Image (cartoon, rainbow, N blue to C red; front, side):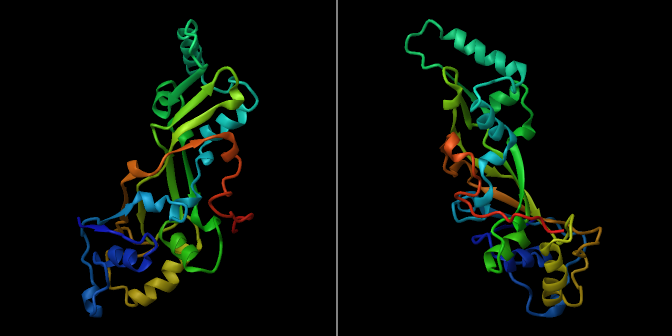
Length: 265
């Protein structure tokens, strides 16, 4: 297995070449573009900090798309905790009682994502997915490249993100050390739907890069021997953290861009 560094997350030519040939550029000679079956899976590494920056590919993945974050602000704004699993409610009550005699206690209870999972909140509540083709739709290189390379992506809330429950006034609750982390991904020419990414790969890129389908082990759309190109995100712990308060949780497109209002049929 070869490991490559992708300096530009939108470099679709390099991604395609590594996927097809295991090289950062297609071989000059057409008959050198044959890649024998059974070759090991290749991996590309992407810097998570630039990927998740305000101008990066992951800019549309905002924390309030995770169900627990959404519920945290929607429900605490109504000053109720009835939506929480019983074990979480019991832990909140326990910590309040523990500090009842402390005159300096500010009435807040801090629970990390990892704590909440241990108390019965499902991991899926802190995970969400987006489709790049639904965000900032336009005829431009940014939209074409991120849709072709990434399209459907998964993201998770950092396990160290801390939900701060203000037990004196739940409407003032907030989240500290918030960070959204991209999940490991892969790239290939397969798709669950006939999206622009799938059709673009099948109808545009393949005829240009491999017109005679010489890369036998990379049979797009139908080949059973196809091995996806693995995508790993590096430096995830260096993604900046933020305090997430109700005022920044209501509109996921405010800082990230505009989501199209209708889904393609």
